[in-house]
Length: 137
Image 1 (cartoon, rainbow, N blue to C red):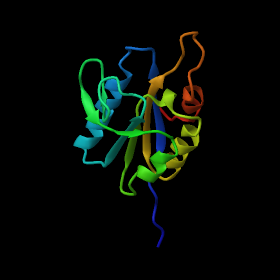
Image 2 (image 1 turned 90 degrees about the horizontal axis):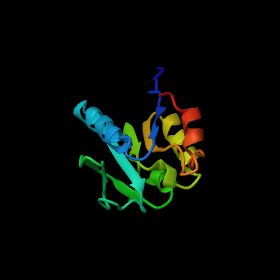
Image 3 (image 1 turned 45 degrees about the horizontal axis):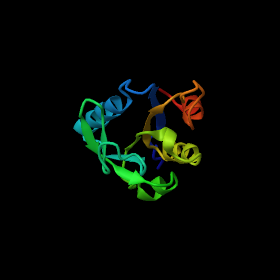
């Protein structure tokens, strides 16, 4: 008997500071949660502006998140039954985040990444440029 495996994909939410990236990530997480999909949210350990264990938007909306020091740790923390993985402030992760996101998508996960697209000089920031090339949305 042939069993079809669900196809995963990558979504990138990017923009400048105060453009609503985290708010949009939280909105998408809530939306899939209402649909009874299993979601896990991650953020870089160094992002502790508003909370150590939540993604918080500038307007105060929030969602519980697991702080992670190294991108590769996400693979160990994602549960097999998880269907959606959300990663905020993706620009602050090490370059390994690219292979982590790709592996998650190849394993059938919907991966939602949010982060700055440019640094203060207007140059592409961190992995966003490459993630956008991999993204479906």
